[in-house]
Every structure is written in structure tokens, then in C-alpha cells.
Length: 469
Image 1 (spheres, helix red, strand yellow):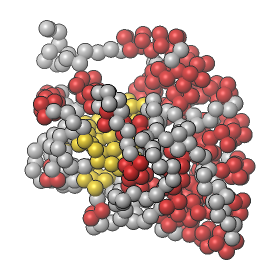
Image 2 (cartoon, rainbow, N blue to C red; image 1 turned 180 degrees about the vertical axis):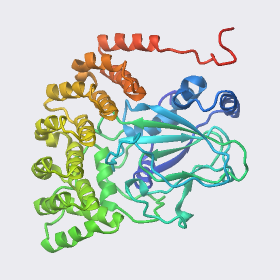
Image 3 (cartoon, one colour; image 1 turned 180 degrees about the horizontal axis):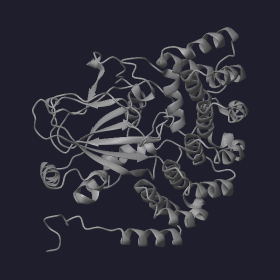
Image 4 (cartoon, rainbow, N blue to C red; image 1 turned 120 degrees about the vertical axis):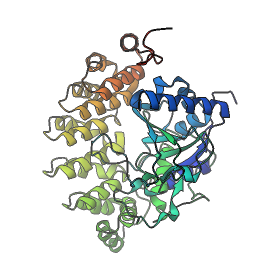
């Protein structure tokens, strides 16, 4: 293996990630590398404070971490090739003997519907030896698919701690429940958090795949419930299959009625019911569409997950729901259609009309979904380009991300991306630059180079070292 060749995850590791939502891995940098990294972190934090989004350019050696084969291999396996590093990054410092609260990270205030499929991931890197007593990040496995905190604070026996030697890191599904644990030693503990996004939808396995069929992993850490159908569907989706559950079970009316009743129950069991209905033909789809149109927010949302894996039979009913007066129902329908990708191409004209919707959340959902579709391409690119001037910053950000997913096919949006490089929002500017990189045309590259040269900074220039040497 060449030095920088990604070390892809094995089938067993991917099975663990799909079920548990996390993997604890380790780089093999020398102790000297981490000692130097830690020294730099201590100096920067003491003299300048937390560098925030400038963590990577301020501590240049940190880039070697994200070029390491274990890191690139893990991210490629989960997010596919050409994944993107988000412009937001943060060095978490913990010296508190009090545990942090359980939480999911937000999308910067944007209340988006969270993906069961891994489109986003995080790496939490520990540059120092981090025993349990130093307060590593704690992750509750299997909770990446739950909107609500379905576990009690007393149920910590299922918690996975990202403890280990310097170079240990947690690869986690973006939506998993996690927290900081107590640092009873009171010594500095850093956790360097970086976020990553998929830019290419799966066409084939991107890990070291040897077995085609799904099976549960040997290392299963689930404190709550098993989700055999959802896990199998996610495995298939990562292998390039859309709607793999559709039509794989009988349309028994009694079973469909029983499953439908569970959509309004305990969230893990409701999720299982939705995926079960997704495989029961048109009658199962109809039950999910009825749930989608429910005024009960959980029933509508969980039904949308089922519809998102139900195949082409769900498309017409989902398009009809786009005209609903309830914004929650509309956004849930948009999400499901986006997950169905080109099976739902006929929804694109309605999507484009919804870009005039007064609700920011609806427009955000539409630009997100359009990035999963390729037909009709010209209309999609033109619409996303216009959204770069939307009044809402999150719409503008999501538009640039969707253009990145379209890559070279989005070249017509380069003029709008050039304007977005001067946007007032830091993330819109940053990801407009990313979009230009993924488009890769001569004009896009020249614009990007000029932008980067104009905005370059000197990582050794500080308040106490302004000019020399």
C-alpha cells in the first residue's frame, strides 16, 4: 500500500457503522507528531483563544491528519469519493469535571430533516492520550436515526467512549446523540471536530466490499432496538441500489393495518413499522401516504422515511403532498422525493415552483433535494444558481452544496457562484468556492485561484508576531 492510499473500511466495519453509527479508529503518527501538535494547540489557545474555523490553517500540521490513509479511507468508505470537508471546524477544549448534555449537532439553526442514509459524517480527533478519566466524547450507539432522545440518562452502560492513545478518533454519523464526559483529571483535553459531506451518490460500494448481502455485525452496541430492514436498506443504498425494499413482502391488509398503528408509537418501533410498510407494495405505500398527511408531526416524519425507500410507487402521492397547506408535511414530502433521486424526476417542475414559497424551510428542503437529481439538468442548475441570491443564508448555502454534487454538470452556474464569493455569510462564501472546485472548468478554476489569493492569510502572523521574520 502506498503511503497515501486510503485504507478502506472492511465489510464488518461498515456493518458496525451502519448499525452503531460510530467507529473508533486510530492513526499511526509518532508520539513526537502529537506532542508537537499538542504544544501548538496549547500555545494558540493560551495566546489567541480558540481559532474556530481557522483551526486548520492556524495549525498547518493538522492537515496531515486528514491526509492520513486511515482517515481518508474511513471517510471514502462512508461518504464516497470526492467527499467535502465543511468550512465549519472546531477545537473542543474540556477541563470540566461535569459531563456535557446529550445532543445532536445542528445544521447552524436550520431545522432540516435528518438523513438515515450517511450523507454527512464527523470526525472527532484526539491529539493527546485520552483515558476515560480525561473526559473523552461519549456516543450513544444506534441513536443516529432517532429524533428524540429515547434513552434515559441512567442508561449509560451502552455508551461508547472515544478514549485511547493520541491519534484515536471517532468517525460518527452526523446525527448521532453524543456528549462530553467528565474530565476528572482537570488536565487539558482537546477534541478536534471536523464535518464532512457526500458529494457523489452511491453507484457501487466505496469500501473494501467482499460480501454482497447484508448481515448484522458481530460487534453490535444497541441499547434500544434493532432495525434489520433499515440496516439492510442502508447497506443496499450504499451499494448503489434505490428502493431495494419495494415489493419484497406481501400486501397483507391486516399486517398493514397493524403496522400503520405503530407509526404513532415509540419512535424506534415506529421506524421499523415504516420500513416494513415500504416493502408491502402499493397498499403499504398508501398507508405511508396517509401517515405522511397526518397532522401528527412524528407520524408524518416517520412515514416520509418509509416513503423515501418505497421506490417509484410512492412518487405520485408524494408530489400531491407538495401542495399541502401544512409546511411540515410539504418538507417531509420533499425529503422523500429527494431520497428517491431520479425515480422522482417528475417532481422537479413542482420543486422549482416551490422555490418561490414564502417559508425558508421549504426552499431549503427543495435546494437540498435538487442536488440529488440530474433530470432535467438545465432547469435544475439554473434554479440552484438563482437560489444563490435567496434572502435566506441557509438556502444560499444549500444551493452551493447541491451545485457541488452536480460537479462539472453545473458549469452554467459559475457566474452566480462568482457573485456568491462576496456573500455576507462565511459558509456561503466558503462553499461557493468549493462548488467552483468541484465544477472544475477553466473559468471556475481561475475564479477560485483569484479568490484564494485575495483571501489568503499568513498562519504565523499573530498579535505578538505581526511582521518579522
